[in-house]
Image (cartoon, rainbow, N blue to C red):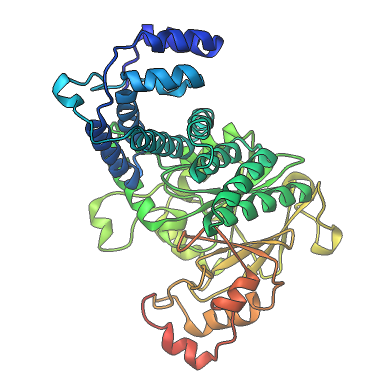
Length: 476
């Protein structure tokens, strides 16, 4: 990653956003040469490698270096001057490396201008995706707009714009961009995004936001200055956990669910969103959901995973809602946690937000509304004895490792039970309404599903207990 900022480039970029005519003037003064397509392609491939590893900052640097090959060409200068493009002048104010091709590198007569434009827009698309993963949504939006200017009928430009607008919480604008992408290419990925935006808009009407944090993008950003932490973050991305934050919009009170891997990142996220953490909860005791000392043989590495213990230390005023059957395991992995910080939950219990006002009320004492958020505890043993799901306002279900998309959590651990898992799936969750949106504990096939989809295609469909036990008794 390039950390050094050239003062002249920085001041130039400030001028860029003040006066578009200056952009055209500066571009017209760039050295006139052919595009170094080969080098740009290599830098794109290197950026793709970083992207696949979740190192989005390094990927941005490589994509920017690839884009710099176009910036120094007469071909680029001519059409960017006509179109008024801006972002190739490094909107993150970094200085691109290897941006001046040699004469021997400029022999690219085999590449047509159409092929060069495809490479250019793909570099912009990939960089926009990186910026969205880094939550630099303004930069992602600039790149997306330039793709649309260059290739208005390419689906990725509109999709990237939708991603950036979604990150900025400009939901109606995001929906329009996704719809345009759908019109160009009706793929399942775009359909899922359209459904997601509509769901978020519905949630806002209900007075809630379900924040879904993903390691590698929302949290767990690796740094060369913290190699051990980066190693742990690598594990987080391999485990593909989700951390959830349930927000009551009217009060900005929130509950963090399964806080793990990167507590500082979770706290920073809540701070930037203006959220007030009033409590936390866990779906079960495993280390990838609560952190702590890894079980043998991994404890020999003397590395512990950030999680519940650090969160409770950082926020001494909050408590954690835990099923009592999982408390001993949590304390074993996190012996520094005081047991009185772990509040016992029971099946059917209601937790309400704002917590300070409604925590003492019984479940019959209030009805969910725009002002009041209801969180019902559903005890769903199987994966662990104390596994629990959280049903928010009766319409959104956080399932931990009880239910995934098309599957469920493992049932072969010492405290697992295949019989209990069958009951939890077939009777407890299988009895819920079809339109309830399910948010699983891991990205094993997607961000969300519904009870109806899992009843039709997954493990909520009718399955005999004996068949389930035979099929799902081994590692899954």
